[in-house]
Image 1 (cartoon, rainbow, N blue to C red):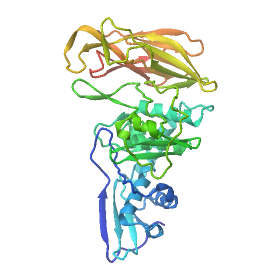
Image 2: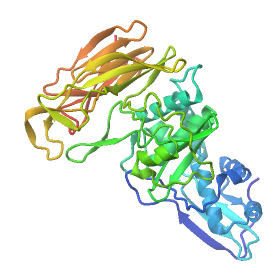
Image 3: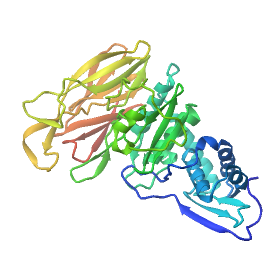
Image 4: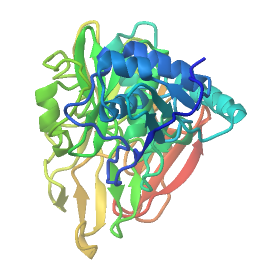
Length: 441
């Protein structure tokens, strides 16, 4: 039993909301640099978890406050960190009350629950199923780093950033398919740590109001930011959308130095007492420059990246170089990278990307919008005008669909289910997305 009996004769109620102002990469908990280290509190967190999983509302924490010499403020920090490292607590309201006697002889924490117990149990089952679905691409021969990559790509491909800043749990991310950065982070912890038993924690940036993950691979800690690897695009009218099949890897398994250089949102952080990161094992990981879902089939990783000889500015006017995208393989046993196919395709601009004015001459992006999708052991990829099937056993390519939409291009594909591809098409990347489903024969 987790509750001590009776109300205090004298008490001071501290009521605090853990909500903060929403920004483009919002996190709903903040942490001071002097915060309690989670590594010191495993027994306390196990106790809290037992109580919350039993739906206790008032929890006596006096023993732990006295043992650690905590102030009420330090206790509240410790409880915030508890929530931020327990992704299964999607049903706990992010508002609580700490009660303590004036003499400091008793401390109580009151948790509030968002749903009825019967509903929570159903939601828990849905969350676990969704987490297991996120491991669908994992094979027995994968290392922990490869498993982390597979889950990274799955979550990004199946979740979009929540522009309302109201969805922040692992449940929102994995089941609902939409979340702010906190939900991405908690979902990654849930799948890696709680399903795959790969040590994974959260990184908090109070100054940037942002969170991401800290993953332990072979004894070394690395930063991974799923939110930044799932960028939001905007139309010319500032309508946000999630690029179909878009999966960046620029923020995957970085050390401290690389993390600071990767984004201004990584200028400072709190790893909750975990060691610094200085490993360089994945600095040159094969998929670093890939903006598409990666897939491992029969021992080889398949990925797509812009050819090194393609132009390196936002777009070029008619007469300049054609864009080439390489579909590549990587063999983890031999550490060998190979170009399987060099694909020629341009994605044209029909209006100026900044002003919105229609262009009199055709221009095109130098960025590639070729994406890889997988159904079974078959890969599919798109050019601006068509979709192709790639047989990974023979290397043969077959066109299976040609876009028949006036002045439009294909801007990405993904697997809709085991029988259909989802295709995004539009005039250029500043237009709102349109979709169609293609049945695979």
